[in-house]
Length: 201
Image 1: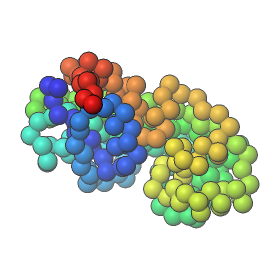
Image 2 (image 1 turned 180 degrees about the vertical axis):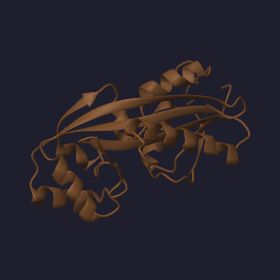
Image 3 (image 1 turned 60 degrees about the vertical axis):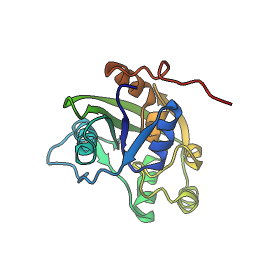
């Protein structure tokens, strides 16, 4: 490959998603403040944070393509971040019961050496079932999704919270839109399929 790939995330879920491309990559934890700014829209927030994460790779690498991603849940035009504890998670999921929540995922690819950046925002809608308090509490106890936007892990038991999913790429709900990422990497000269190497027995 022309560039090494760098994932600006310590999330095991994003790392697992990127492994689907079967390409070598390094990862690091970008240490940035994820707090929304005054009057910042959800779209502006995820764009800014995904770019900040990708640009943070300059502190660790001299060259390469850095991949940054950030996600927020939007309900009634309000940004809902990570719950951080059980009480907040129950509150979020109770609000979502029998409602539709939009998840916005910012995705950024940044060429460190060329200082060139491309960013997209991928929307995804989740229609929640009508949930009882007992169901919500049981789910929180089972998966403890306190560091996840929206208070669930769709790659696990969280899928049972949903009535329907609407979007182009279910991977975006987990935090890394792979279809868009493949397209962005192609713009930087990396064809994911052509970059595959034969398996040696």
